[in-house]
Length: 320
Image (cartoon, rainbow, N blue to C red; front, top):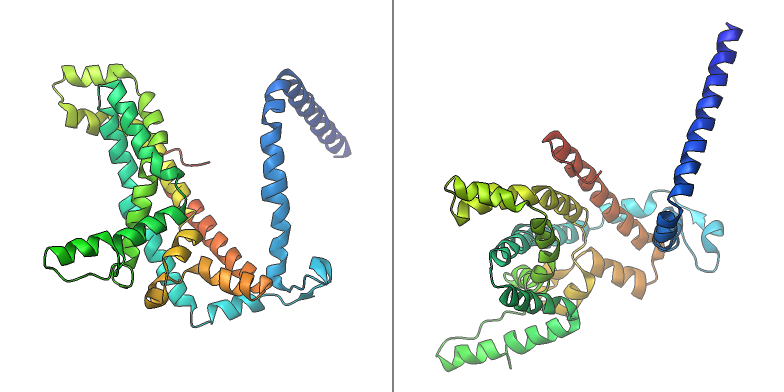
């Protein structure tokens, strides 16, 4: 028995040495590739992983004067306070509805636009269209909010002036609770639909042209080629991006909502980001708002893991 244990330990040590030697040999062989990715790894370590230490204050009554190590431990007190707060369901509803509208209406549009641009045969015209649809992405939300006010304002908005000119009543676009979520969705569509086409166009360029030629021989028209060749060719990319989008389902963008909200639409515009801003930045409740942020992150993580598992079950690659 002792001899068997000694033999097993020896084999484990030998196997560990072999694996270590193999790993070192591969790293030595690809040293320039590792050197190339080193700045990126260093960036994630410093700015992504090291700050995660700050999550601990969600379980403390954090004081900047005492620091993380000296602050009192309160456990789940902040989470209980958050979940029992009367604003929780309002915040959750607004955040989820804005995100779901974005997923339903915004997510498919870059795919459709990419397919349309991929069908263009004139390269110069195609590049011109690409440049035009990319441009809004580089505009800040401040500019977009300003343009929205100039177009839709009740007092000096161009659209309402046209309504009055043609004999119609003014419409309160900016202070109407029924249209606020739709307004945010339209802004997102206008700003980032073109930018979202970059990945899909790159995926389409990797599709073998012989598949299109074979489809033509079989009598497939342009629509059938898109359905049977283009869409299956980018299906993996669509699924991966959808999974990653679900990870940000609780993030609706603080800057956009903050610039567009007003007292008249407070019930539909207050989301987790604006709530954290008021309580964390303005009132200094760092531990409490860190707990709110941790809750959002956990929801995103669960959705990514769940969606990735479902993708695997249906035979797709998934994210990992």
